[in-house]
Length: 315
Image (tube, rainbow, N blue to C red; front, side, top):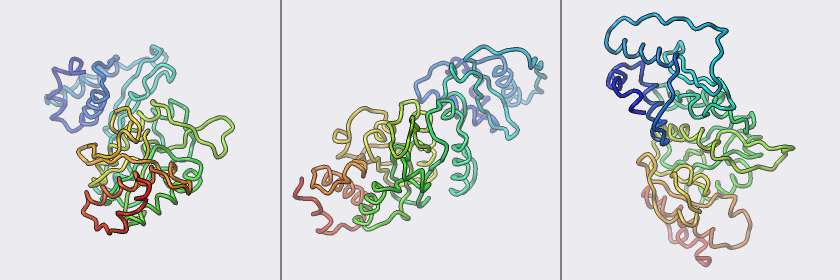
């Protein structure tokens, strides 16, 4: 990627209008991409940025004939009226969904930034290009100034019906866990990686696992949510969430028991509340609670002997 824009990288950095493009290129680089295809429209746009950065008048671009077809799979870029840069899909079947749009968060306050994220998520082109999600968005809930951010995988039947993450039996279990910690839902920030329920044929209350592509196109939103909330601790609920955020393989049992880092924030992996819904005494209940005790210790929350003893017989 540096080969593509190497000579004009400094010029792009010094002009504020190019910041979304630079952020998008860095996002692709973080995903391991080393090259990008630049078509004629993109070259015109890059030259425009370069000329502005150098303080030179730009040359008018030759208009492209509206009847001229573009190559299948080609991703064209355009500058929109707000000054942002987005990639528009030419062929959904061949284009890389992650290269179809650039997430740019606007707003000065956290509330304004959340509105910006929600507006973009509602019509997120990379996710729509995959075609595997339903129509009702379930974004997040809770306190934008929370010390604890809890992240799940995707909304299910109950979440889609209520419009809030962790709304069904798993949500009730999560509420009980928070109560045992001495806090409640309104004091934490709760989100999912994917903001729409995965769809499947003849779907009623059943759910399916997310695909890797579905997770990848939504990860930029979680990253921006972490920046926006600036929590002191992140709790990953479930193995799929942990693998996605940490970029590693491994089960919950393998990844829990220690603090990882995400965007320089301590991150704890533990079991999804749905994993411990039954009334039977299981070792996982104690493991989950030990993880929450570690979160409480990390935050300096008071811990009683009674709290430390929860599920101790199953350890």
